[in-house]
Length: 112
Picture 1 (cartoon, rainbow, N blue to C red):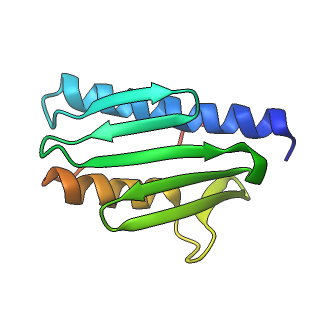
Picture 2 (cartoon, rainbow, N blue to C red):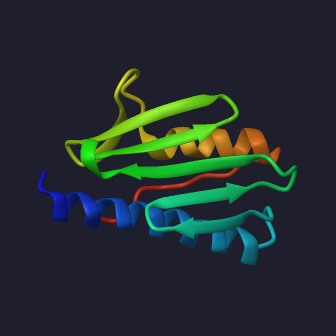
């Protein structure tokens, strides 16, 4: 993947997460605050815990940090997959946010 493709894909991921958080806020499911600086998106949950999503351009990865741990994702065949377990980024993000928010929350990949 070229650098420009990487930046476009990661921008789409961060925008999709922000859009979903806005939907959750509008529908009064859970109050999650977001703060974005460049390729870093921080989610602050109601209990003040945080989840950080960070792009890593030199590695062409996305990193996810949550209470349960840190994960590194590479783009493989149309999906962001964990470099160790092979798990999907959006599945893990859904689990981590649900766990830290105390209610079920789901995130999905942006349309290709």
